[in-house]
Amino acid sequence: MSSNLRVGVFVDAENVRYNGGYQMRYDVLRRFAAREGGHLQRLNTYLAFDSERAREDPDYAKKSRIYQQMVRDFGWKITVKQVRRYTDENGNVTTKANADLDMAVDAMLQARNLDQVLLVTGDGDFLQVVNALQNVGCRVELIGFKNVSRQLQQTVDTFYPGFLIPDLLPVSYEPRNEWGQSGSCVRGICTKWFFDKGYGFMRIVNRISPNLWVTDPREPDSPYTSVFCHANEVADEVTEEMLMSRETIFEFYLSESEQKDDGLVANNVRLAFSINR
Image (cartoon, rainbow, N blue to C red; front, side, top):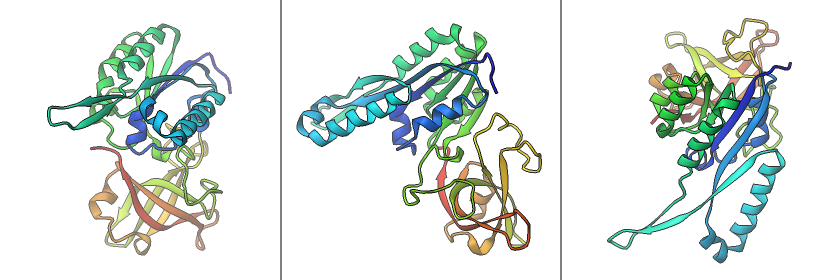
């Protein structure tokens, strides 16, 4: 698939890192941004670097350089923000490396060259940026993890929970995980639950696709899969309220169904994350 869609991606890396997106894979993010065959006009990410810590901790300095080079190898432009330290009247030291302004200015300056903007953040401070981009004709999509501003979700054209995008976040204890296959560990949401019968259905995204709007797994071109789940497989900590909320992300293993051909069953279902504050 190819198109004339001009796409820009802007990643608030510090917000992502502190809100559930640690170890986000930039190669998968790039693949997701290009899923409709558009031209990736801008790939920008905004990282923090602590020079003072780097002088005292060679291991931190080395890991930072390696990480930045890896991101650049995937074709991303990196804007590095230096960490600054502030001491209050009680002698308490806080650090800050805010790239919001840089990211907002870059997105606005590039707006005339873009048809679609993908913001990766949960920060509600970008609300005015979203409105401005939409007013000049850009479609604005959002990927967020935890603590995503509800108003920001409601203002963008489409919001995608980053936890649900296949392989965007690695499963650290499953290094050879094949997302969506029997035996793999995946993340999904509960779409239906019959409390009186003791079972329900989870839904996962089984592949990155331009048809993410086709949410009915029964449709042949839908990238979603419905997964049967018995109450016995659900962790004790999971409440009825959690099961009824589309903002609750569950993590579980897949196995083949013994009753339905090509069907999948959820095992060891546990609470992973909640999207909103």
